[in-house]
Length: 234
Length: 401
Image 1: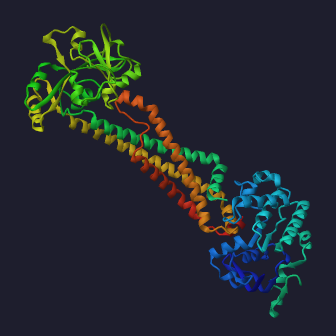
Image 2: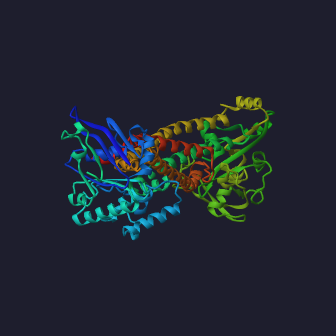
Image 3: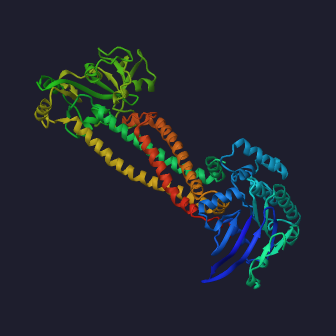
C-alpha cells in the first residue's frame, strides 16, 4: 500500500539545514494499523505530511499503491488526497461556520448526488452517536464530539489510507480512549490502513504495530545495513 | 457542498462585519444612483423645458433668472416690461408665435401664471386636458397635474391667490414685495386640469393674462407683463428680434437655449464635485470590502489549509474568498439600488416642488447597468488581493501555530 524508499527531509533552521527524517525503506501493507511514537520534533508529523503529499521529500521516493507521490504535480496530489487519504488532526479543525453535517459534506466528492450524501452522513453520524447533532455548529459540541465529526470527515469517502496526527492530544483520558477505539474499529471495518502519530502510550498500545520514530528513522546508525521494517512484523 | 452555500455560511457567520460592508456598498450605490438620476433629470428638464420658444423677452437682468422664472417657474422674474413689447414682437415678421406672460401670485406656493391659452397648443400640440376645459374668462384657471394631486383640487374648486411667487416660509419673494397678502377679493375657479406634461408646467396654475391687472385693479396705462415667449419663424427672425429689442429701455431678449445651457453647465460643475464625492465613496466602499476580506482571510488561514488537506484545489480556495467578496458586493448593490430608488421616490416631490426636477424613481436606464458592472468590478478587485493570499496557502498552513 505504502512504500517509502531512501527518503530524506531537512528543514532550514537559523540558517542551517537540520535533518528531520532519513528513512532507508519502509513498507506498510493494506489494512495495517500502525502507531508511531517519539519525542516532539523527531519528525513524526513530518512523516505524515510526506505521506499525504503536502510536503515533498528532499530525496527519495514515496509510492502509494504504485503511484509515485514524489513525482506528482500539486493538482494531482490534491485529487489523490481527496480520494485516497483521510486525515485526522489533533485540534479537529472543523470549519466554524458550517454545521456538523456540512463539515462532513465539504470533504465529500462533488459528483455524489445530494440525497446520497445526506444519507451517508446520517449513517455515519448514527454510527458515532451524533445523529441528533447534524445541524449543530462545532462550537456547540464537546471536544470529543468534535473529534468524532473530524473522524467521520476523514472516513466518509472511504479512503484506503487514514492518517491521524495526535488525534487524542486535546482530549481527556476517557474520551481519548473512546476515540482510539473508534478509529481502530471504523478503519478495521472498512479495511483501511491506519497510521497514527501519538504521544499517547495508552493509545499506541492498542495498535498491533507500534513503532518508535527511531525505528523507521535512521538515527541510531542502523541504516548502514538498510533497516527494513515491515509494518506488522516489527 | 456547493460553493455558494459555503460562501453564504461564511458571510452569515461574520454577519456583523458582513452587514457593515454591505451597508457601505449599499449607501455608495444609492448615492451614485441618486446623483445619476438627478443629473439625468436636470438634463431632460433642460431639454424639454422650453419647447419651441427659442427666445424670451423680459426686463433687464440675469438671462438665466429670466429663463428659469419663465419656463421652469423657479425664482423671481427680473421685473416687468410694458405690454406693448408683445405687440412689437407679434408684429415682427421673423416671429411665428409670441405669448405674453404675467406672474406675481401663488396658490399654496405654486405660481399663478397668466398666459394666452393658445400657448398650450403651440407648446404641447393637440393634447387633451385631463379634465374640464381651457380657461377663457378672467377668474378661470387651469391647474397643472402635480398641483391638482398635491392640493387635491378638482374642476369647480375655487381658490384665492396670495401675492408673491411662493408661500411664506418657502423660497424667495418677488423682488420689491415683502408682503404676501391674500387677494380675498379675487377668486379663481378651476375649469380644467392639465394632463401629466412632464415639464415644470405640471406645478403651475394657469389663468388669463389679465389676472394680475384684475387682481390689482390696474388701468391700461399701468399694465405690464413679466415676459414674452417667442417662437421664431426662423433663426434669422430670432436673431433680428433679439438685436432690435435687447438693451432697449430696460428690456432684454435672451436665447433660451443659451441660458439653459449655462444652467446645465453650472449643474455639470456641481456634478463634478458630486463625482469627486462619489469617487471617495467608492474608494471607501472598496476599502471596506478589502478590510472585511483581509480579516476573513486572516481568520480562515487554517480553514484554507484544511480545504487543501481535504484535497480541494487552489482554485477552489481562491473562489471561496472571491465569491464571498462578490456576494457581499452584489448584496450591497441590490440593497443600494433599492435604497436609491426608494430615496428617489421619497425625494421626488421635494425635488419637483423646489427645483422643478422630475425624477422618475422607477425608471431603469443604461446607467443601472454601468453602476452594477462598476460595483461588481470594485468588489472583484477588492477581493483579488486577499483571495490570492488564500490561493498561495499551502495545506501546511493548517499545522502552523
